Each structure stands twice: as structure tokens, then as C-alpha cells.
Image 1 (cartoon, rainbow, N blue to C red):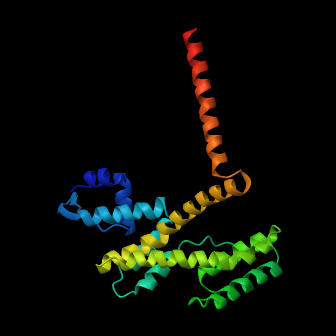
Image 2 (spheres, rainbow, N blue to C red; image 1 turned 120 degrees about the vertical axis):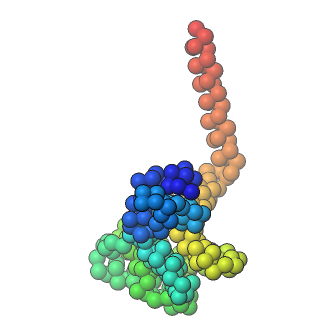
Image 3 (cartoon, rainbow, N blue to C red; image 1 turned 45 degrees about the vertical axis):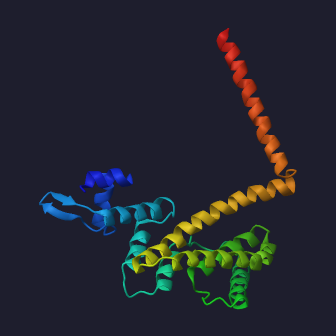
Length: 238
């Protein structure tokens, strides 16, 4: 297919496709003439992956380039590819608060890793992100949030097993590698969205009178909207 057709299939503008090719994110098409290139289904698949990593996963172009480099390395073990993707998700930044809060947060994360027997290290970027979050909570007067770490860890382990169980169902090596990246980056977006949905449900059940209260509120809103529509209609008739 020509670049215009590739653009239509993926929703990515032609200038953006050319930019991805220049940056090495997308392989160049096969030249059929000095000014004409043809693309195939592999380009479409890669372009959809790039778009998802950028727009849904929230990665920067440079991070996407590094992740795709890991995907294309045939000698890199799957857990190394997963690490390359996971390391690009962190927020970075300085731990807020004072040194005591930062030290306490680091110690809590180290203790969690040791207690859970996780085969990782406190230098892992995710450990740094967790330390920063805990320090920020302590800085805001919510240091007791650290008491929930093992409950969060239980949920995280369950989700991690589900993610990698999906990868194991893939047969082709290239599919498994790509699935690791997709499950790591986009899986985080899925889990965060589901967590927000669960928060709403839990909040209604704890503080809003249960699911029936939420449904009643929705019905009241619908009735108010209907009354407003009827009033508008009567006004229009006059």
C-alpha cells in the first residue's frame, strides 16, 4: 500500500508517519521509484503499536524508540523486554518532604520487596516511583498509607500473573515479545481505569447509600432532564 492508504488505515497523518520513519520508530517502506514507497501489513501493525504507546500508554517518542529497540532485539529475554517497557512508565522527579520522610519511604519499599520475596532490587525505577509516592503521602500527613502496601502488593501480584498469563498464550516469538510491551504499558492504563471505576463503586457503597442510591440519583437526573426538555418544548411552542 502507499503511504496515503497506510495513513487512512491507522488514522496517523502522512507527515507524522514520515517523522516516525526519520526517527527510526517505523521501518521505511520499500522504494518502487525514487519518490514512491510501498508499505505492508507489518508497517500498519507497528504504526498502530506506536500510536497506542504514545496516545494511550503516555510514553514519549524517545521512550517508544527505546521500547521498540528492545522488541526488535532477538537475543533479549522476555523479562528484559518487560523491564525496558516498565522502566519508561515512571514519573521520576524529586521526593517531596524532608530527608527523614524520604529515608522512611525508601526503607518501607526495601522492606516490602524483602518481605514479598520479589526478585527485583530497590534501584528499580518502579521502586523509586513507589518511594516518591509514599514520601509525598507522608509529606501531606498521610504516612499511614504505607500500612496498605501489602494489600496493594496482593492485588499487584494477581494482576501481574494475569498479564503474563496472556503473554504465555501467544505462540509466535514476535507475538509474545509484542504482547509483553502491550501488556506492560497499556495494561497499566487498563488497570488504572478499572481502579477508578472500582473507587466510584466503593465510594457509593460506603458513603452514598449503596448502588441503589447511585441508580436513584441517575433516575432523578433523567427525570429533571425530561422536565427541562418538556419546558423547552412548551416554550418553543409559544
